[in-house]
Length: 208
Image 1 (tube, rainbow, N blue to C red):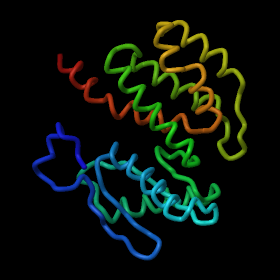
Image 2 (image 1 turned 180 degrees about the horizontal axis):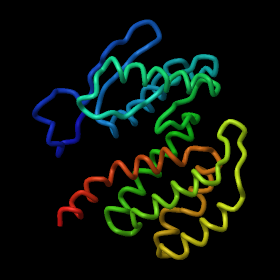
Image 3 (image 1 turned 45 degrees about the horizontal axis):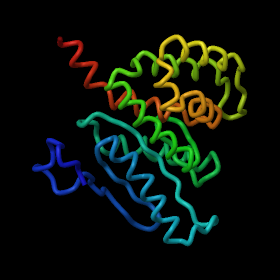
């Protein structure tokens, strides 16, 4: 359901629109943040329904488009994201063009939400998130082979110590969570969530 304070609450009965569901496929349209969490809940409910049988799993692909983007075109894009998840080993999800396991996906979403709240409260500058994005793009050489330059470690510690308060670093457990998501290749999902969730504040600051 939409949150009580959502301006769309009186316009629709449900946050999501089910395009189709048949056989072993389904396609859902919804608000970007709620859809990211819907994917997790579908996976979690299905896994429990199947008794957590490791041989019965779900793969998913999530894409983001503007409101007037044609459905038939983003249906193709979402299908490509789904195939990417299956190609990486199934029982995975692709979001922000990044494929991860479901457990890593949940951790990334939770961290992204906390980052967004920290940005809103001005405990973390939004530029720090963009720094992390550039750091990841620069030092992860190949997501397929797992090659990674070790230089990202001192750069991360330097920037965290230089830009953030000690209380913020400890409360968000940044020096534990960022390296874990970095090595699991799930960091882009957390960063993408935080960037999208705080874009309105950037627009407001630009207007003022």
